[in-house]
Image 1 (cartoon, rainbow, N blue to C red):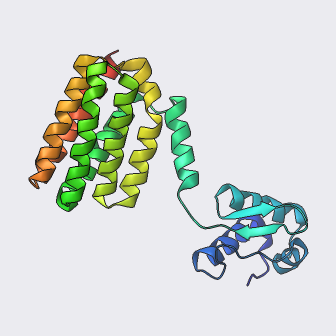
Image 2: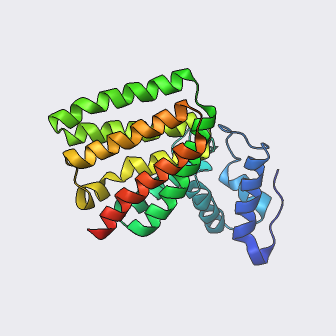
Amino acid sequence: MFKQVKQNRVFQDIVEQIQNAIFNNTLKPGNKLPPERELKEMFNTSRSTLREALRVLEQKGLIEIRSGVSGGVIVKKIDADPMIESLALLVKSGSISLEHLSEFRIKLEGNLVELAAQRADNDDIQAMKDLLKQAKPFIKKQDWDGFLIIDKEMHTLLGKISGNSVFQFIQKTIHDNIHNYYDEYLPMNKETATENYNDFQIIIKAIENKESKKASEQIMDHVHRFSLRMQHK
């Protein structure tokens, strides 16, 4: 499965060989790598270099290192969790400026909603209308936490309707972690919540009419307006 590594790039070779074996399905999720002693012989390397390479692969989310009698190095199913966690930490920590977050969201949500308008079926449209209907009582009660939950669910639903899993998980990660920005820079009130509600009425109507460009322009304008207020504050 593996070959001896070049001594001038031992560490990189180990990482690349195991990584490539996972990518080409020579190693599949749930498979256990050979014991450490055998891996050392295969790669012709030291224990410390091998362990360092395995730690990198574990950080990438490609393997899991288990201890104990039944432990070992287990190949993991490749998923988006490490990327989602990193993006979530960036948003939560405030490391991303509001201006850059706004630019990214405008483009992301514009493309996503355009796809949603092209792909939405009757059940999708009804699901959006049902969510919007649930939002109205929260405005009346001035329950802003409840309203923001519906707002997040609406954005998540649009991501799902788009049919693009990459757009979907990036958008959902941002919306799952963006509320600390709202709390500090855009506290909800009746006027703001009503404006938000009215925007989504227009977006849903455009999606229902298969007006993908109009739906896209409306969501981009929506994100732009609310982001400008946060930046101004």
